[in-house]
Length: 193
Image (tube, rainbow, N blue to C red):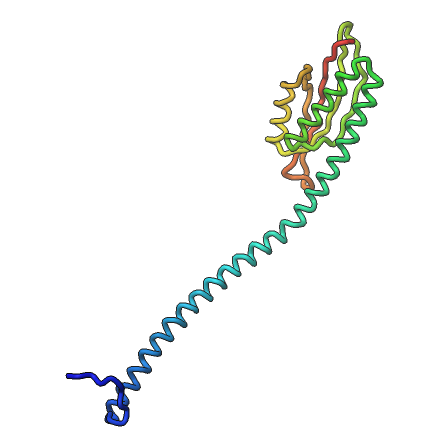
């Protein structure tokens, strides 16, 4: 049987015309459905990705105020560190072993900053003359998480001068939870110059 090169529509019977028309309709419908379904799946994937990105944006928007508070807190810590350095300089002028004590206080403040411990205040006690050395008492008020505070207190033993931690008083409240406020009583020992 020889296939015709061209479809001669006029020579086809009505039944054959319907078969050819239905076949073309089914083939074109299947091809169209295949492409439509692929595009539909792509659209669904893009919508899902968009929802994920919108959720991520909303989470970042929720974190933004916390980040702003952290930035303000860091700026406040920088000002406090400058005040502590000023206090150390004043102490250096007032005390005989001042240079060593000033550098000790500066080192303790630097260690606190490195550990993520906030130094709230430093109260210096009166130096006690013990003959060949001075005892320099100080009460340091700190704020940090429990583990961070413990690590900071542990690092005090690695300072170049001897520092004895006498008492540690820890408190917490709903306003600062999970942070602790700790009052640490220390005594530093300085050789006389």
